[in-house]
Length: 386
Ligand code: GMT
Image (cartoon, rainbow, N blue to C red; front, side):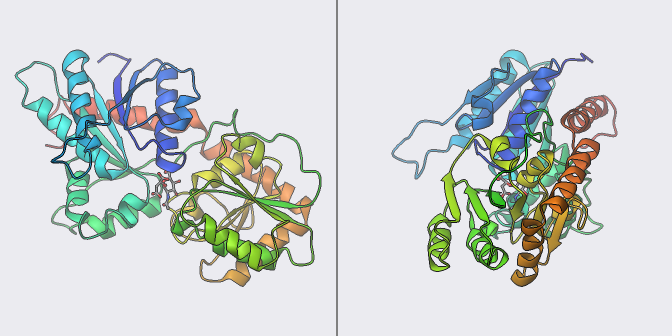
């Protein structure tokens, strides 16, 4: 087997979560000398900013009056198949079950039916969170999501908690068990690093897509309690459906001068590093990549104890965890770090050390390449998945 692999990565072109992980993985694999193609319906922002040698294939499809909406996922599948036929792909790595695992499985099975000596690519599906907890669990998508999990050659999740949820939501008990490899998310410790200490008033920062699951209005209320009697500031980075409500809550609590809404920003290390604390208030969160990026910048995290967040943040060491239904407890922990900068810095140092020890980019990327190679070896033995 060649040491350089031909890898196709399929992802949502998003600012957050799965799009970031897929883009950073693509760049890291290309950096290691693999031939990497990334398929999406737009260019993911983290990739757009990189001069790296990943080949990006944007497939959007063409509108046709019979289509209710343009099926970009079919255009992506077609583009993958075309590339496989012309140059060959060893691995197709889908990020987020729907629709990408469907595209990958369909492309693999179409390649199987080609009259060609070229072996079909092996399919790896990485589950990220709401593809299992919300979207895939919705009855109209559940059967297909379950099929993608079974029909992939390997499935990974970004935390043990998400692996557990996947088994709960999609397992069939003993009749149809499936293996899941837990490969946590990673962070580039060069890009995300401590960069000077905060001057001025104490500050908390939060980055998200302001979807309901992130509970940004809840965070603004908690911050109002936590910062009472102080001149602490809260910086909110990102945009999404709940931004208007969060602004309204800030207004209602007279926080207009102390809560800043920055909108979408690329300069995350510069925003995360000077903050005294990173605030995460999600109702559910399989991992919490933004919290990891903050920790790499030596910013401690106060988070709700949901999903896989406890696999990232160590309560009392790299920040604090609080129950998601106890705003007063959350606010008290946030306050503890806003009023005690020395303690925040100490926890920040522990947070950085945890990233170095457990979430360093190269080490985690090696788990993926090991998995790819394992699949390609299994391919030549009768023990691989059918
Ligand atoms: O599942 C989502 O909400 C989408 C995803 C994304 O694309 O933004 O976020 C998820 O994947 C991230 C990367 O693996 C994780 O860090 C997030 O915790 C996870 N979000 C949730 O579980 C809510």
